[in-house]
Length: 289
Image 1 (cartoon, helix red, strand yellow):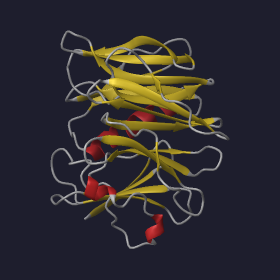
Image 2: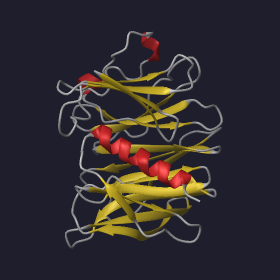
Image 3: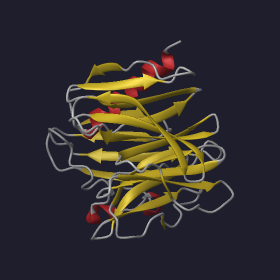
């Protein structure tokens, strides 16, 4: 059994315990010093990993209070998205909670002593999935999409306030959003079918409450899930996505426009390989002039 340790963009620590065959098990837990979150994956099978099944299942023999959402494995909750608070250095987590008939968006954070009680940012009949989270010095930002309507939603919570009313980002059909802030402006990126068998990457700029301005900043001729993710780190901003079944793509914001997309090979479609591809791109971006 091989053990690897990967540090992600939000100071997430992913501890990978991989075997060549076996069922997938994974936990989400706080490290004992309460400044890190661990995702421990045990028993990766060959081929695409069966995420989200089992991703919340406790593995390590540690204090049970360190585990977040251990019941999520039985419900087959969606994968977590984790952001580190730049002020407290404690993690915030969102995921799609399976309530039996659809998914609601769940949120929790570590307060230094334990995970706070899970909050539900949605609670309706829509199937709300694939949330992503961003935290800056001012607020917490969460986005997700409704599967049937293919509509993207955004909600914000000021650091010293309550969650605001969710806002629909666009009237067009969009999927799998990601969110970040840049220069005090909220940006939401998502993917949309282009009507010709391909997909567009749509970047929406929040101008005010419920007011977003959208532009197409990238495209692929293939009709596949792009899973585009927006990143901000060390005064740099970039996005990366699955361009095809053999390539990952990425584009950096140059200060005035998005650079032409660059690519790197990507042939292993497992969840671990996707995260490793994003890490390789991060390294390229942060070490470039």
